[in-house]
Image 1 (cartoon, rainbow, N blue to C red):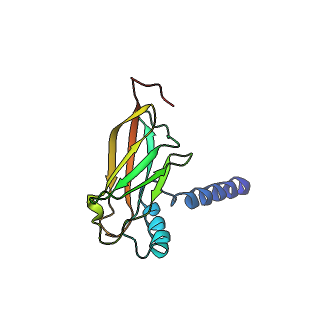
Image 2 (cartoon, one colour):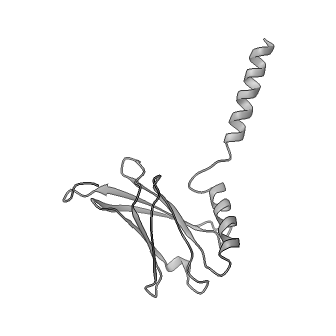
Image 3 (cartoon, rainbow, N blue to C red):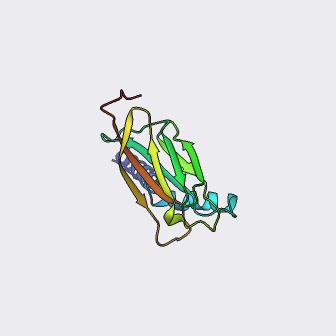
Length: 140
C-alpha cells in the first residue's frame, strides 16, 4: 500500500513538472521574448513559428521570409522540426505590416496563422504556415 502511494506521488510530480512546457504560444512567447529582447535591443519585434503540411506533419527545411513595407527581407530555413526564428527589423518598422510567408519545393502555401500577444506589445509575433503538396510538382 505504501509502495503504490509512493509511486503515485512520483508519477504526479513528474506530470506537474511537465505541464508548463507549452508550444505555439503560452510560455514559449515569454521565453523567446526574454532571450531576444536582451540580444536585439535595437531591433523591432521578432518572428517565429512552425511549418506543417495539411496532415500536421512538420516540414523541415522550408523557406520562410519576412518582408517589410520598404521591401527589406529576411529569409531563413526552418530547422529539422519545422521551426523558424527571424530577427526583427528596426524599431521604426511597423511589425503589423511585415508579411511572413513560407514555401518549400513541391508544396504550396494553403494557410497562415498569425498570433500577436496583445498583453505584451513587443513580444515576438508567431506565424505558423500550412503547406500542401503541389499536384503539378512532386513533393521534396
